[in-house]
Length: 161
Image (cartoon, rainbow, N blue to C red; front, side, top):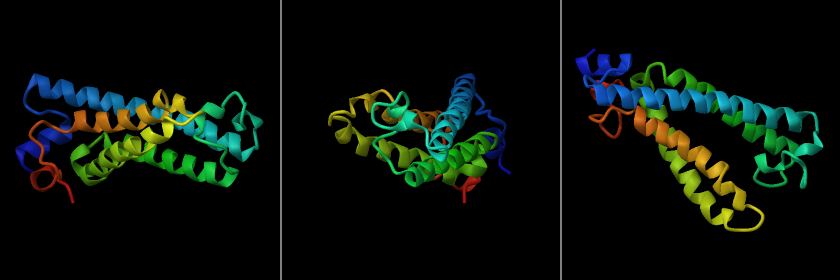
């Protein structure tokens, strides 16, 4: 393992600024994972038990994009629960998870961009304060986690696939 890959695995980039940036990224991604478990666990459970709180006018309807059939909401929540688990694990050794982290960063930037036009439609303005920042916070955390000298693909000496 090269010195750079070893440093990235340990969370060190050789400089205080890089170390701080990586630690901020790790903290942000851990917080995102924990909050995702809470948010999407609530959505999954709510739809599993048929809670009216997610219906139009319900107290938790703001957590979902639209009136979704129960199985669709549970599938989407399930995907985010698994994604949160993988992000949690990837933070431990970002160099080994470079491909996953790059995909996650880019996919969530695109996801947020696609949601912007829809959020201009009533009654979805709240998505500018919920869903859109949620996916962009994830992308920002991954961007911060990447060392300043990392290649785009996180390949080669960074241990990517």
